[in-house]
Image: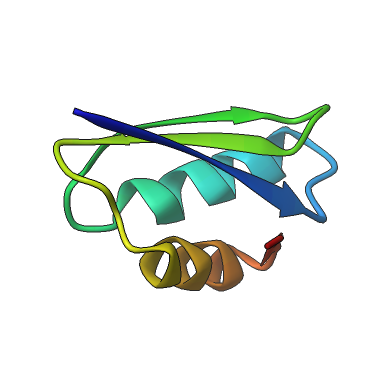
Length: 68
């Protein structure tokens, strides 16, 4: 089991959290996503480590930015 933590900028409300959760959750291999709105931290759980490029693409599809 892998757990990765990313920081996402631009989220301001519950709808933002829902959008990021849905998009990142749709990435192949992801088994769980938790978003902490106040900190912008997104925790991604998967059987194996997920490529950062895949997470970045999902976050951008939701309309937000993944910080380095």
